[in-house]
Length: 268
Image 1 (cartoon, rainbow, N blue to C red):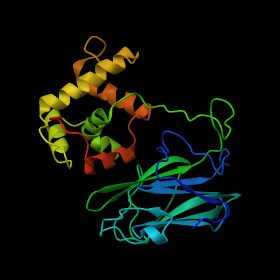
Image 2 (image 1 turned 90 degrees about the vertical axis):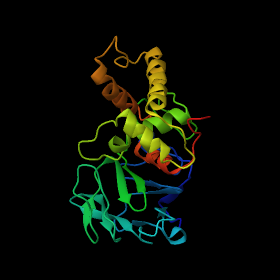
Image 3 (image 1 turned 180 degrees about the vertical axis):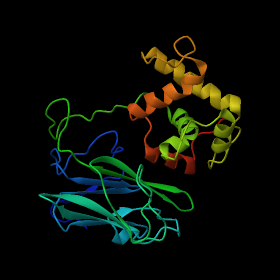
Image 4 (image 1 turned 90 degrees about the horizontal axis):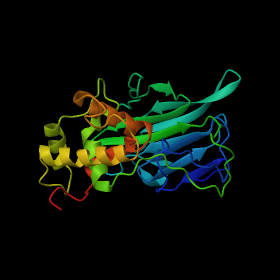
């Protein structure tokens, strides 16, 4: 489905919140659209009339969403470049039965449309489980000096292991899903979520808390304040940890997929 001015994104492309991909080997022009799903995605130059299709029918869509989820439509949504004043913007249209949820925007229902804002936006579709599609409308700028095709990739993320990441995603699942009034879960709720993940077993409140305690002390050693009782009130520590992880893009919305996959369990 490659067309001039449209380029596929590899399935191993890092989260669009962590970094903006190059566009045909060079920094993307302003207004360039990046869409990343569960098995890769597409980048498209802002040309009026251009469109990308998202849905379950992998061979015939640009970005696969819910490939094994019968509640997701074969062609669930389109993103189309439309004229807006002197420029163009990207318009999301829901062609599926399930609503598409965008943070801080009323849910996009079937046959409804919404303009995608500049910058990073996660799209959420709740079928048999929660599907996350990442969207980035480029500002056409890259901080920190010139970027060339051979320039190394910058990673903002803090050092956490796969096991630690799983526990953090469970702890912050509603925050990552941008739910209303979202907050970190209790240790009891976190252990329950972990035990529902395929391949997980033996998680207790104490085991989940111990993993997060280890993360807090590791990050404190890296100079991050407010994660221990001698630098913050006990009731503020979870919130401080949450902000450190989100602000550094250590955790991103697509990490919610870990709650549907097998990761090394608590008894290992």
